Image: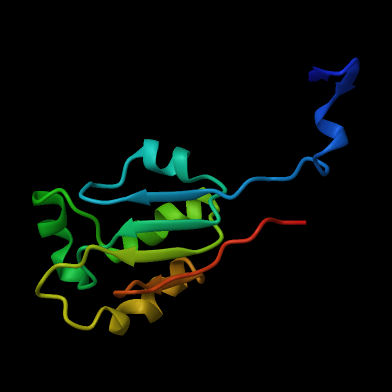
Length: 125
């Protein structure tokens, strides 16, 4: 509320109706945690580490404190995000898109992130 020249101006005089904000969650260099899941709940976009796509590297992911594509997809599913981009790949992973079919069985709205990838997030009206 602002008072100017004996007039009272209120937010409803200059703003539209309340609306849901845009939520982006980004995480990397970590194992899956409850706090990631809790913070990602309802995100419009979840950008998440996916160091390994190869299922046989799950032990390595634990050892080096990273996530597999499938762990990231489960976080996205549990957090009910709208879309997930995998990122932060192992240097040995040259074709992440090869694993996306299996990832999308867990979370259908997953994409393999790549350089210069972008999206415009809009408000729900």
